Image (cartoon, rainbow, N blue to C red):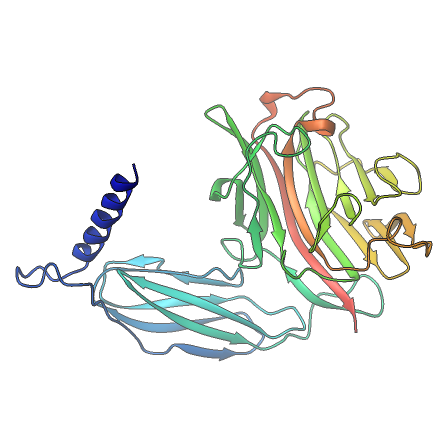
Length: 361
């Protein structure tokens, strides 16, 4: 088996060299030597939404793309060897300067266009005084940005859930200024997305908010929540559930904390719920103010739950470390499937208008 694999890899490598090599008999086995010439490879732009043009010459057809949600490029591929790229730059509504990249790929050659955008004087107003916007995703582009990573797991991985978490465009679509997390039946395999924002760094303290429209259907289990960057033991290291809902109890949203002292106890100290009559038909905001003293949860800017640091130590307060944001849509499982699942409700969609993180200056 190992010999077969090695032979296959060598065969593929040879094909790669042939695909973009000269057609002349004497050079058809030579390594690829594609070149890409750009009229400009760096832009420094102001905060406004704008368009930049870049002329490109390539030896062969090429592809162009960006993993930054605030950049989009057209055409995404071309057989023309002398053309121009149009790069759309979204307005920077954050108070941070940002850097992005457009990648050009021609055969074995890659080149890039770097774009630096000035920090904005944010048009987004903080929901509480004393805070300023430090990170956000308004989902204005056509794909998830590089700050997001996917979880990829088979059904049953956690909470006896029935979905497979996959990294596919069909389960996490960015369009029309929103992110759609789609729960769907793909020829008998239920698929969905679980995605993390800045998993390796996260944030410590702040106001974290998302505007979400929840899915319909018995068996759905959407969530907007946070886990510690350096999670070692659950629930000892903490979990913050800003918003959850289960489809068999429609329009009832729940905020909960988990730690060693309080974990699924169902007490008013650790969890609270509220009926939001249009949670599945309209957008609502779900927020968390997190300080060293307490965690306060909000629905449409109204307080739902406050969990206080009692000063007794980590068992009751493991919330002095960075946490990262999670969005996911589960199917069935220990809570979502308590009353069964209704497969006729698939596909179902959790729609996210934005995710924003504010911190004190």
